[in-house]
Length: 179
Image (tube, rainbow, N blue to C red; front, side, top):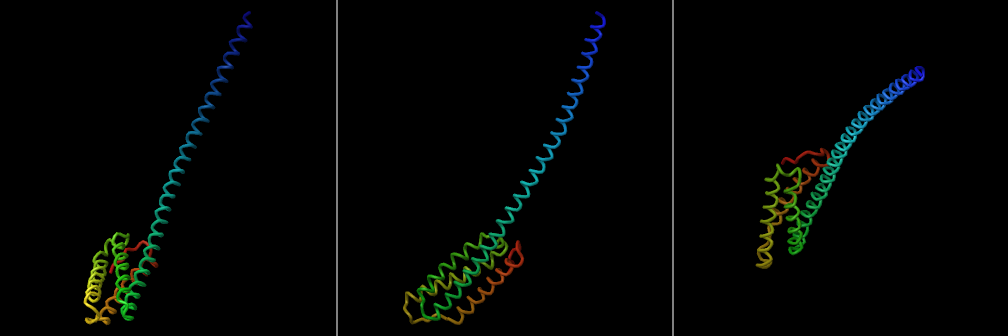
């Protein structure tokens, strides 16, 4: 009976040791998996940050391209105003002038123009004065002719300024325009 008891005791010891080994192996495996999961979580966080940065850069690039397009449309509008005035189409010039003023006002809030409010305001003020002159001329009749040479010089100087801003945005992305 003693031998049976010894055998049971030894069997219990072996099972206890085996259970302890399996438990330790499980703990080691759990620790390795936890470490791996933490590393994957850090990589996912890094990927999320990288995706956010890439999305921000893409939005900025799109914004710059839209602004370049708007500057081009404004330049074209200023050229059209000169052409309409030279062709004595003052009502069309007035209509185009209103559109150009609206687009210039929209530029004020754009990224890259925050530090250039004075130049944008100067263009808007000049367009406002020109609009008032054209409206007065339309109300009083064709007698007081508009000073086309001065108007043309003024609008072409603004076209040059807009071209400079457009080129700065096109060839040095992320730069603010400083005129």
